[in-house]
Image 1 (tube, rainbow, N blue to C red):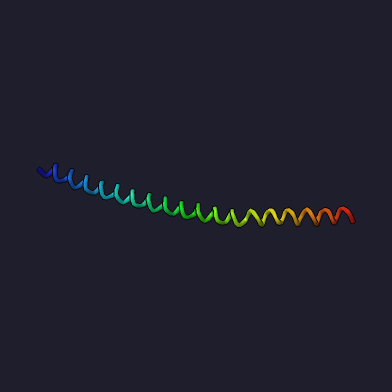
Image 2 (tube, rainbow, N blue to C red):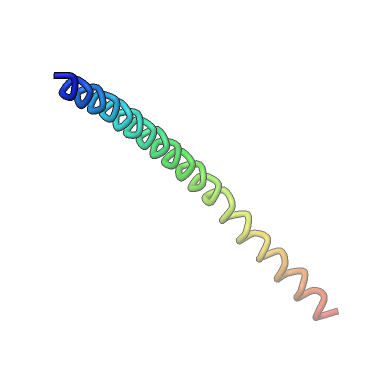
Length: 67
């Protein structure tokens, strides 16, 4: 009987650890999703600025070449 109780205790502990691990994985996945959304927002803001900088650089270069 004691062996059965010990195994039940061990199984209970393992279930608890597995449940905790599952919660941790879900939380980390949510964090990654938030970071990905923030990255997308930054990329959307960065792209027009990058294009504009290239345009300005091309104009400045052309002015320098033609002078």
